[in-house]
Image 1: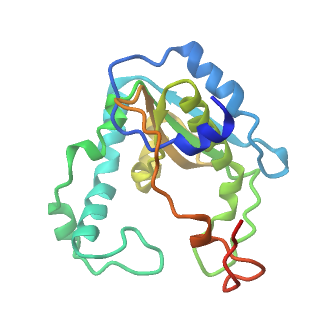
Image 2: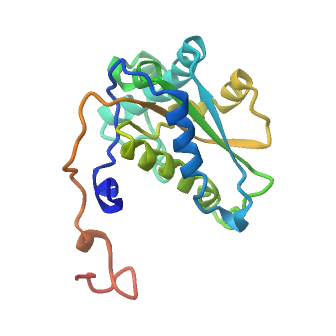
Length: 221
């Protein structure tokens, strides 16, 4: 596929067929995705490719508390897990909240789950002293994550970035033997999508790009 076609059709795939994602294809994804940039070219990311079904079921279990909170907040009109707006929902309400089974199903229905972490010893967290949630260190890992998804689309496979299990990071690190020096950045199920979307709904350029200043004029072609 042409690059722009891949960029315009890489969607969040959450439903998969039983078709396997062979190791040789998976290796090819990694072999091309590894050319993603990272801060100082330190390449501190690590990918743990999990095929074991019991381990993936455990990842689902670790994701459940965050999923319950996500859907409880959605039902209450809150923005789930938003760092600027504290939730007012009681914990007992969260623990009683049900959520659709398919929300976490990709973790077991996919062919493989990638748990992607980054070595905090090599990232440049330039925003660590600001009074907000840190984001800058993600520049050392998320380009790799997205490259994997682009490569998967190019091969006829797909996946999605999930983060629910990250709320239980210590347990997830213990499950997979990930050292404490690594932060878990994404949990990515991959497989053969039930269908391939080709037309995605996204904001237009004018909706989120301005000239010179945040409140500057809309950028147009």
